[in-house]
Length: 358
Image (cartoon, rainbow, N blue to C red; front, side, top):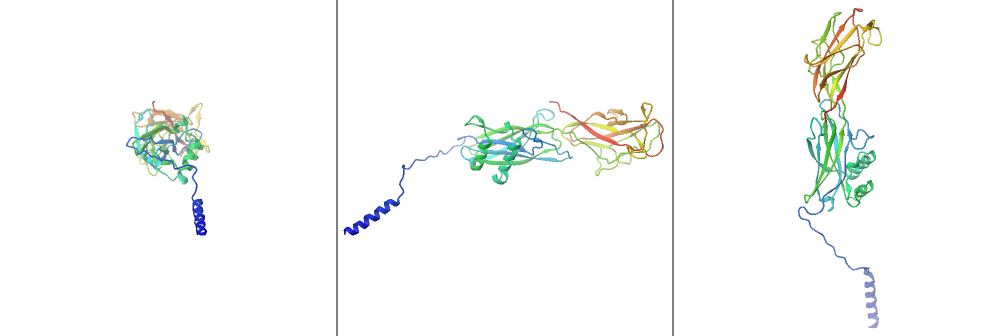
């Protein structure tokens, strides 16, 4: 009997030893279920836009496409979390506003909803690149309420690594004729309790003046000495582009494909026979006076003619507004008789930007 009791005691001892000892007793837990409007608002750690076409400047600079009726794709990014967990974020939106000055006076452009992108293959690489390039400028970074300072790279990347924040993105566009300037970009995050946070920055749609012509060459046709010959343009865009000259040839047309108003510049070389400049014999001068004179006009007879000598660049005074086209009239006046036949030169069409009023 004693032997049996000893065996039983030994088994009890082994069973007791198999139960892990607790240094402390159980701890209590609790959770607060939020009503609508409860809890903390979402936290937008940072935001930015791509492409950033000028990495020498902080923030985002977007170049226009410089193609008639084309769009420039723009991606809007944000890193968002919530005090109640990132899954408590209900939606993230971007509101974009035109520049404050003319012609849109800060008017609303559009609203888009952002979606979560894959963190490892898309989100983190995009964030790291934007941070290193200076695309995420100071106004793109929120203040950390715990420190009173902007969130740091280490704080943001740590949350991404720990899966406590998500990267959101949506692609919009800027139309070729959208006016140049600083666009206000607001990211708004809303959680399931309808709490909301907004983080605002600005991106620059870089001002680029660009004029396009609808002709591949230009002919004044036949002219008589001492007569001024005017060759009318038209407002019918030739597609494909074709040689321009007197009717029934294609009438010269210019159009604004940039994102600012512009004035057209014109420059015509001296005439050479038989080859184009600088080969052949130039028509040249008699004394100090050129033997040929040109003039140009943007638009009809109510607009201003500008007279100019060979190799002189002139700016036509009339403004070519955003996404508009206009006819270009050119004239030639040969003052002195030269060798008959075909004389050749070069015509250069350019532009200068006309800023919008603030």
